[in-house]
Image (cartoon, rainbow, N blue to C red; front, side, top):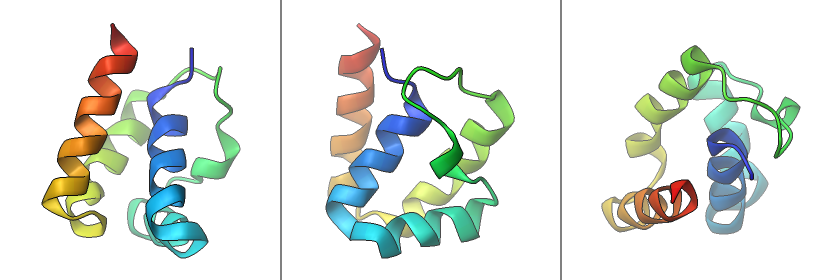
Length: 74
């Protein structure tokens, strides 16, 4: 099962390409590229990512990401 950081990174890369991921890294201070799909999510890194998502994604994209993450958790 892919971790949340990996899923968030994949989602942003599909919507905003590499620039979006670079912006995510810059704004959060988390090197999201260093997390593989099976790595555990460090709580501090995940919290920092979640704080910057509203600045990168539109409300509709944020809602879609939330849905995808909740689907993956079940």
